[in-house]
Image 1 (tube, rainbow, N blue to C red):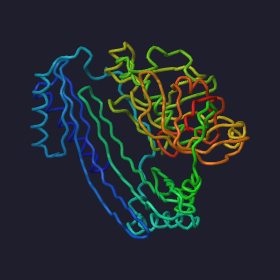
Image 2 (tube, rainbow, N blue to C red; image 1 turned 60 degrees about the horizontal axis):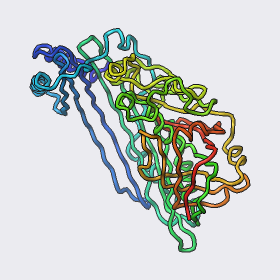
Image 3 (spheres, one colour; image 1 turned 90 degrees about the vertical axis):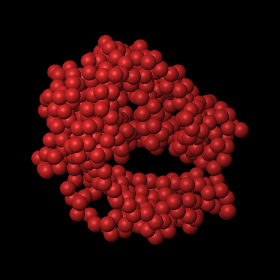
Image 4 (tube, rainbow, N blue to C red; image 1 turned 60 degrees about the vertical axis):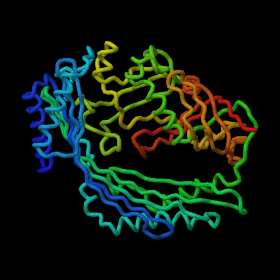
Length: 442
């Protein structure tokens, strides 16, 4: 245990002690400290160079089943003591809620897994190296093709932080983590036509885990170039292939509807569907915050509950909701954590080329826009950009179209699952082929 961890755990214990002294029957506290660096370059020149340090404390007090919460960035003990006293007083005067409370003591994590979330070598990377990496990523993108005509820049960022969580029922847990990211974005144009943008990034817990600047730049350029000459298509119902980024976005929307909060509020199209078929029979959705070194990993959740690998969908059936202690009491279910980490669709057996090759006429979806997802009904309608598929090949780029369906129909209509699963973020998916969606154009 380092000095920062000792200091923050001591502060958390002080908060719990003061809360009891002021009359709280239960409480929980989260304390964190972090520091970060952000570099931005454009056209080879540094435009942004920022460093930041921060700290914060979140406190929740309960008096019976009345509660109140407060946040502060002033971690001096005198200030924290005043904040705790005021929060307990606010709780005492608040409206009661029969479902309010902390998880039962036996539910808390008993031992914390070692997940390799901190990269000590990141501290040895000097600022000049970070600037050069951002410059190289942008330069690689700009040099990839004469049709790259402008740049949105390149960037490098990193952060390191420590979180301590404790409560009045005996749980104390902490963990440190690092993350870093490298990106580039450019604009492409051909024959004085409209410009198309493209970008790419790499994120990792470790500095060594980042993609090379050259690879990031090349992919950013490819993504801009592939949309040159985009056109509309006529309105039709066709198969749609979601690329991994679009598939991950769809996954996040679907699993978000499995939140216990949405379910007890009856604001989810998945309400009442545990045990029912909600997706294609070979689809498996996994949440695994215990993956070592992964971006979405953590040793406990926001209430101190243990984390584990769990199946949200297996063989097309919804296995569980994501339930915190409050939702658990509302629904009469045991809490299992309402947050996810390293959420993914299990990889299938088909290569992206094989999936595209199976389609005579359809859309390869690469971007969507707009708020066109209704979590109550599952209705889905998004502005879209992509590449049209003809006779099993990517034929030409398309834009200014809309893709529409219902998420339940989409998930049940997944015909092919890609083998190209890569953990580039905390929510990922392979390429997916959906049997049919309405594509509206001209």
